[in-house]
Each structure stands twice: as structure tokens, then as C-alpha cells.
Amino acid sequence: PGQPVQLTFALRQRGAARLARLVQAVSDPRSPRYGQYLSLEQLRDLVQPSPATLMTVLKWLQGHGVEDCRSVTTLDFLECYLPASTAERLLPGAEFHRYVQGQQSLVRSPLPYSVPAELAEHLDFVGGLHRFPTERRAASRARKEPQPARASFHLGVTPAVLRQRYNMTGGDVGLLPNNSQACAQFLEQYFHQADLAEFMQLFGSGFAHRTQVDRVVGRQGRGKAGLEASLDVEYIMSTGANVSTWVFSNPGRHESQEPFLAWLLLLSNMSSVPWVHSVSYGDDEDSLSYAYMERVNTEFMKAAARGLTILFASGGTGLGLEHQQQSAHLQCPRFPSPYVTTVGGTSFKNPFLVTEEVTDYISGGGFSNVFPMPEYQAAAVGRFLRSASKLPPSSYYNSSGRAYPDLAALSDNYWVVTNRIPLPWVSGTSASTPVVAGMVALINDRRLQRGLPTLGFLNPALYQLQKQGLGDAFYDVSGAGRGST
Image (tube, rainbow, N blue to C red):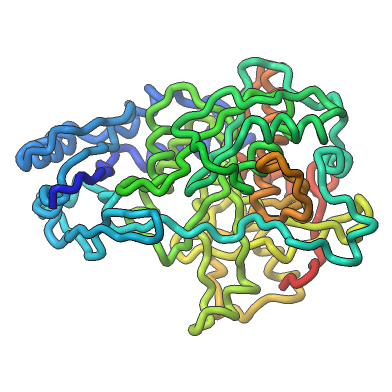
């Protein structure tokens, strides 16, 4: 009962409808307000809770002796530290226990909580009670042995291969000090600066680059480097070469903190953050409450209003896998907010040559069961559904939901340096996502050189480019790779 817990109270925001309209205006290249982003302080004035909400929640907490709290710049989150016994009185129904697995332990309540009726209209959710850290699935994976056919001929994807495939020269590097990019790492994933330096020594000779991350926000663990963290940092910094790079690090399984939620709070509390963020972390929709997803969606709207580009890996499962695994034959989609850009994966059709790409077997995709299809993608998805030659039965997925991924890049057979060891055959959308993020950072660099705003929320512009024709901006990936469905 005396065990301290950390709870995050998501206070009900104002101006959500106005925020949605503003995001649409500043993200649509056809809008006269395109690129006119808000500062964090302007965003606070738009979304901060009402005085009644702030007063009611604070009075409730103080009435239970909860005083060790801190807010964020936008005033719409409160992080509070309190004994578990106090949390149980505060939130009827909650019952905290310590859960131990190996050397890790967590304090959680497995039971639903409630709040007093007079608080319900002032809170979206309370974080830190019953969500357990998601076990890391194979968003990236390394084969223990190369496939025989590839052992003699295929050297794997490196920064040079990516630059050749995506028409980038050695001169395509960042030049401006006010440009920036970031990746977020969670769940016992660390990167090592020495790995980055060795990676650049091996693979970065053809372009100007940096060998150190400029800033780590959060705790950088001292354990072994994680494959996924190494992959993220090495490829965002070799594609978005010479661009200032941050790492948001929340690597541990804190006893009471949800690392993804902690990252969102950082975005709501920092006036200056990188323009582009690559995230290789996700949850399935059926593991999250509707209130949580709605609020997280609003947090991504806030990021879009500030001109931030948020890219998420699409994961390793989709329609072709999930409908075979679910007993009820229903797709179980990832949580694809309409206000982030999801990145899928491709592989070379000819594994021995830098040639056209096909869908990678490891790339996830599908349709949301929570968020309706946004207008920006309706025409493109409609054409896809009408022309696709192989789809699961329509009863297996929600064709009117938000579709993902939005775009894809090579995700198969990467070289990575981790714990000072070069590893080949690393695959997953955790590879393609930082690559796309680095490309976006380079485009931002060129725009900033010309006095133009950064790209911000990509999707409205992406789908408009797709509608205008693939040739100038995208490759069309129409085939299926090994094991794809």
C-alpha cells in the first residue's frame, strides 16, 4: 500500500474542433495558411483546459493529500507521485499489486478504475494504472544465418545502396544548423555512440556526416546496445546525413511510468524540438481504451499544428497475417492515428541488384477499427481496393477506416553495427522508418534554405502528390515479395 506510483492525469482540453481545422489548414499545400505553424505557447492558448477543469482536478487531488505533481506547458497533463493506497482511494476500483518477471517488477492495478461523477467531464484518462509495457515484437530482426542464395552475391542494404536507389548523391546532406531530426527508443533499447562512429567509418565515406548524436533526452541506459535502437540512429543519421539529431530515450520498464506516454508529455513540454521524429513503437487497437486512443490522437494533432513530422513503423503484421491468426477472422490493426505518417516496408524484386521494389513479407498494414478514413486518403484507398488483385474477404477488415501504411521504403537485409559488431540481414519497418525520416529532414533542409516552412504533417501533401502522378515523387510498388499476402 505504501509503494509509490506515478499517475498521469490527462485533463480535458478545449478547442479540439478548432485544432483539427487549424491542422488541416497548415498541412494542406493548397491552403493559404499552409506552413503557418503554432508555437508551443500559441498551442497552449488554444487547447489548455478551462479554469473550471484545472480547479476541479487540483481540488480533488489536494483533497486526497496529493501535492507532488507537475504540469506541462500546455497545462493539459498532470504527473503526480503518490502512495498506491492513496491512488486506490482516489480511483475507486483500482487495486495495486507488484508484478515480477525475471529481474523486472511493475506496480499495476489489473482492475478497472472509476472517478467521481463530478470529475468525469474533466478527465480523458488516468495513465499508469493497468497498462503493462508491450513486449517488443520483431519490428526489426536479424537472421542468424544468411540464406544460401544470398551468401555469395548479396551484400545487403547500406547507406550507399539507399542513396543509389532513392536518387541521393553524396552532396545530399544537411547544411543548416536550425534543421533537426529525432528518433524515440523505448523498452530496454539503447544505442552506443561507439557503434554509430564505427558504422559511419564502415559505410559513411561517400557523404558528409556526424558521428555523434547531438542530444539525448531522458535516460540513456548503460546496458548492451539494442539492435533496434542502433538501427534507428544509424540510418536516420546516414540518410538525413549531417542533420542535427536527438534521441528521446525512455528505455527501461519503469515501475509505474508508461514510456510512450512519457514521450508524448515531453513533446507537450518542450518549446524547441526536432522537426522530424521516427518512432518504431506501436500498440494494437484492441489493447487500448477508446479514451486513450482519442487523446493520443489529439496529441498528434498538437504536433502537426507545430509543424512536426511524426513517422511510425507500420509493424510486422497486417491483413494477410492477422486474418489467419484471429479466431473470429477479424483484422487486429495497429494504432494508426490519422495525424501521423505510417511507413511500411519493401524489398528488392531481384535480391542481387538495386532494382525495383516489391512488398516486403515483414511489412504490416490494414485499416483502423476506431478512426474513420480521413479525406486526404479516400480517393487513393478507393482506387487500391478496386484494383487490388488479392485481398482478404471484406468482412475481415473495416474498409471505411483509416488505412495504413501511407508509404514504404526498403526494409529488408540491412547492415547494422551493434555492440561494435557489424550485423547483416537485419529487416523490418524499423529500418524503413528512420530512412524516410532522414529523407524528410533533407527536404526540410532545402526548404529552410529557401525561406520556406518545414513539411510538418506529411499526409495531405503525400496523397496530393500521389494523385498528381507517381513518376516525380514516388515509386509504385505493386508486386508481392516472399511470403507477402
